[in-house]
Image 1: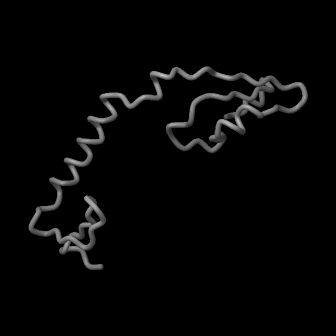
Image 2: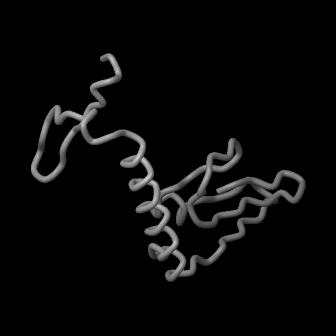
Length: 97
């Protein structure tokens, strides 16, 4: 949600993708019950259900980021600190604690 003070309008749309000081993320319950000050208009942008699904580009970007981090530190400089199920906590032995 964001306010357009010059137009006396409150705009409700999808969750923000980056931090914006004048935008607020609302849960479904609060967005449905939102009212604006007297004389203001509430504009509700319809969400495209397909846009909410993970896109191939998102998955590829995530895989590339993980791959890039894995290439930065040589495997011999890493030790396993803890394990929980299939997840492991790794530490770079070259970096002091």
